[in-house]
Image 1 (cartoon, rainbow, N blue to C red):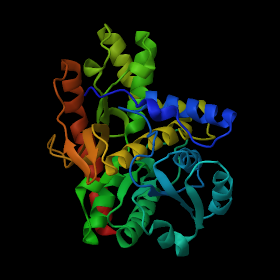
Image 2 (spheres, rainbow, N blue to C red; image 1 turned 180 degrees about the vertical axis):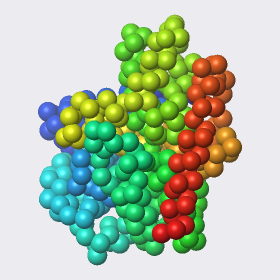
Image 3 (cartoon, rainbow, N blue to C red; image 1 turned 60 degrees about the horizontal axis):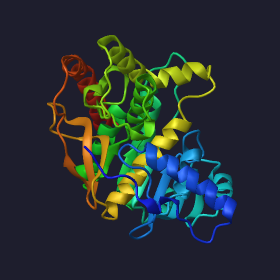
Length: 361
């Protein structure tokens, strides 16, 4: 999908000291150029929105909250966690951008954090550690997601839900079942955030091909764990002549990107900063879609009929009602067709695992 370049209005900020204006402009410009299709909004076109981050005191939640505070589309930023969020909110609130940041801590304040939210981002849960797979996180994170989505169903049933908590292949189906149980499920408003896979694929492809990463687009389809992550390098733009071994190595590195970071941090964390960046890109795309921007297209894990599986990640056009159009996979190389076939059993099993958890708990 070829979309227009980011608007020139990106670098325009009002009533800021010259140094701060330059810094914010540079950050915004980088985000714009590196966005999954286009970067974060620049002019705040449309009404200011309320965004809630659940898990805002964590390793992903804190930088994600900061990035959302910088979005000109956000008027109110609700930062929620079981503890620690008053301090996080106080810190972020000092950033001289329009959004009003408030901290909410503990179950008794969850409802207030969610009321009136247009977009809810959920990075809550335990992070990966060396030797852990995303499925190892399931027992803990599944319950956390179920509780938080139940609160969303009660307090902001029309919000767009951005699920980051892993394993996304299972937590999104859990969220769907919870929303169905509350009678408020709208498949157009539930998203698994797979943007980090796109960010990684773009970065690795650009490095290997010697391209300006700001010009690169690579769709990534399937799921959000291991071999269920399928970057479609045959559809990458600009086109680069890479041999079969290089494509396979790039695919493997994209699939193992999370493990690469976990191992590099040697037990002291997972992919928090890059995930916060990717989460902010996708949340901002949702905001732009809500506000009527044209041609907002992102890869995301949604209820889908693109394959025989009930959920699948592919390109999705975002708009005022959420997911307004789900695109097919397009022409695949033989290698990609093999990868698609191979992922189906694992992804299907992960989806079913989430469905059964929600039904039994």
